[in-house]
Image 1 (tube, rainbow, N blue to C red):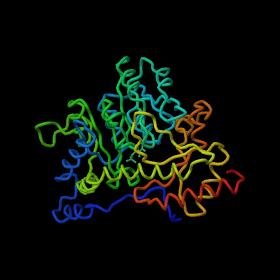
Image 2: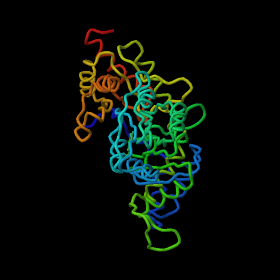
Image 3: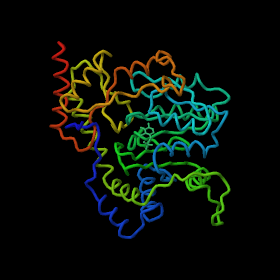
Image 4: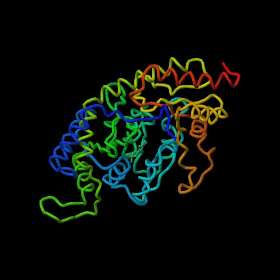
Length: 370
Ligand SMILES: *Cc1c(COP(=O)(O)O)cnc(C)c1O
């Protein structure tokens, strides 16, 4: 079905068409061409990173990031159970073992206390996922990782523009990854980026994403690599998207503020913004006070043309990760049963948000609440 208000819709009103046509007119449509380097350097400049390497999506970005740090069989990587499936799958692709941690109640990010409790001598990395645009507690995680000599791999797929103080997420970890899927803050259709601190790691990522090509010898390969390259067409879209990245992020602040006003007083909690951080509100999300309200509220909204998404299901409950008991991670379970993401695309107007909030209010008044 098509919704009047989908959860997401990309904003493609800039120079995307012009730059894509330039690729076609010039025949540079594959993974060589000027837009690739341009997109990478614009992106690196924007978040303040040394090295940014484009890849074909955010999932392979994670895979190649982990592999470039030498993570493989026998290693453990700590990851929140409340995340998108790709974070965890990428760990499995390397042969390493994902070790799940619970979330913090207020901000929904991985619990640093639980991370500390799950570190063993096999722990090779921690993967903080900046969920829905909120920052993880990177100060504590950087200290913890340094204390135990383990890597930090930031999954920033949902957090382009998120800051702690004046520093963008993606610049705290040894490596960080981004996604440019159609519903992400900026999009290239499909696409991703890997940011690395150490030039040697960046170099290895660039070789791994391009079939493990050796330096200085054509068609000679000295490691097993992949074809994880981004096309020039995608990079052209990315360059156009970067021209308005500040505008999109600013609009998301307005949208979050409109929802805050429109939802005040209802029996639900908005995603709290951690003091000292800038929440980029990839998705405006709420948790209903009563778990029993979440699905009927979603149904009510669907019937009036408003699409929503449930918060992620804890990954440890899925069959390939053992089909574990939801209660094993009580905070993740609590949030997952009550949470929903509301329409959050940058072209929403104040009227749109006010109409959506009116539908949410109508659900609760119909059910005898405020
Ligand atoms: C979107 C997303 C990914 C994967 O990105 P794709 O580009 O869809 O492969 C990874 N992690 C998180 C948290 C995401 O939201």
